[in-house]
Every structure is written in structure tokens, then in C-alpha cells.
Length: 59
Image 1: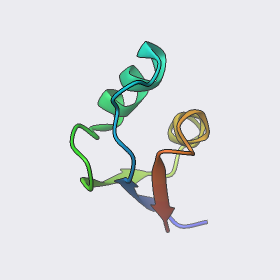
Image 2 (image 1 turned 90 degrees about the horizontal axis):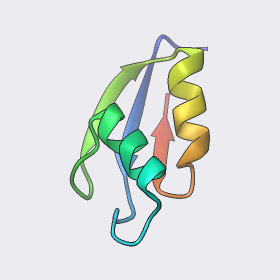
Image 3 (image 1 turned 60 degrees about the vertical axis):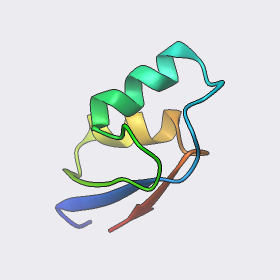
């Protein structure tokens, strides 16, 4: 697996659960279509799994 993941927010945070919003903020995804590059760790993979319907992930 690659050392970094490119994560893009593709759906709005409006109307989602507070815990999912906290996960997105923790990853640095605050605005629609914003992209962040994060290390591929088990913690980040778990966060992605929680909001997988809202983000696009590229290696």
C-alpha cells in the first residue's frame, strides 16, 4: 500500500450525524471539494470507513 492517501469531500456535511461531522473535521475536510493528503494509517482508514459515502479516496 502507498504511504499517503488523497481524500476529497464530495458530499456536504449538512444533515449528517455529529460524530461523522467530527470525523470530517478531524481529517481537515471542512468545505466541499476540498482535498487533503494524509498518511495511510489504521486510524485514518477507520475514519474513512465511517464516512465512506461522503469522500473519494485515491492512493
